[in-house]
Image (cartoon, rainbow over all chains, first blue to last red):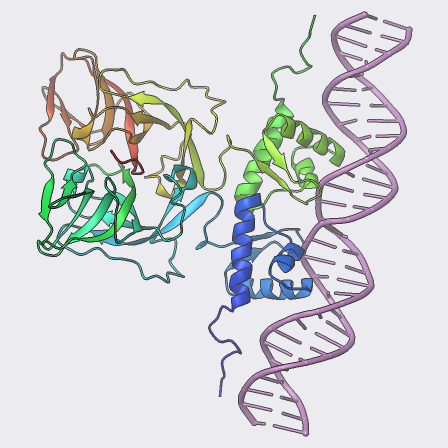
Length: 225
Length: 225
DNA sequence: ATGATAACCGAACGCCTGTTCTGTGTCAAG
DNA sequence: CTTGACACAGAACAGGCGTTCGGTTATCAT
């Protein structure tokens, strides 16, 4: 009978640790670490063991190696590189549907359904890794100055400060919307980004579920209707 | 009298060649080249000469080096890296002012006034290097679903196809605007991106200067008013 | 038990690589 | 002409670094 390996689940803790170290080292130094540097930072005393793990990671497709070349390794595809931030594209957002939130353990999201953003473009210090992106479907967000096909990048949040642009689910109205959030004495005010449009006033009794804060909006203008 | 150096202009042909090689090597291998590899590909027979140039490039701020570390070099700032596209931020765009176009030879734009965009986000194959970015000032572009503070990325163009979103200067009205462009029998129709707003109809007699096509719009939502 | 196998360690080998030192030819200033 | 900065070449040194090999331990199926 065929049996599974010792620690089964394909990627042991040490594999993950090496992968993480390569990524952070590369981000900081702009070049890959040496085998010995990996060993030091991952508590592996022998270079041969590091090499041993590196071989496995190569066979499993997590890294590529240039044999005989010092620091000749690179992370493949699904790992953020350089000054890039890779956020998963969790789905679409539209007025009539709730907001899809990515599962907290999104280990594996392929290049196809993810968005790359230059870190230098990121506002404040939202460089956290729990951001996610949604593609806007339909023209229901035009009062937020967001059009069909636009991509919004969100940070998960259950509450907001005044002035934050939030993605909310209004269960009473069965509606998803993107608005600037203001708490007022008798309830909430949801202000459209488009200054020519009127705000939505909510009483305290109406349910308002904040799903996330909008961090960035990206519009590609390649299509033409 | 103080005299200039042999080849004057700060960056000799060989410096440029080395810089280019490092960039292309890094892009291909995801790790920097060794001194000897630079020598081979730049027709420099001695490693000391490569080192000699590398020192100069470091002093002039074009690269950084990690001494004693193999392949410990990286391009600094103003050079595109990895899958990043760096477009110069040419200035601001607003209704009452003409559109600033960057000088064709924009050799030196610092990190401060440039925008980085992931290549994977770029529509079609606009990966050309003549793109430029403008920051929107004021709320005059709201009919294009573009707000104060947004960043628009443009490709220089003097003409457009129907359906392209273009930045135009209407000299008769002394106005800059962003609209979808349609040529019609009796003139032009400039259609706002916001579907709730009416188009501008132009007669053939009215001057219309196309300055560029809009490729992308980026909105950072860190501010809150 | 026992043998197989995965997961290690330590050391040694040898090329890879950055550094340094000596030397050469050129060109312009004094 | 001399001097000196500059742009190179070549060789040698020393440490960096990937690779390999022999050996050890623990786990697990037979």
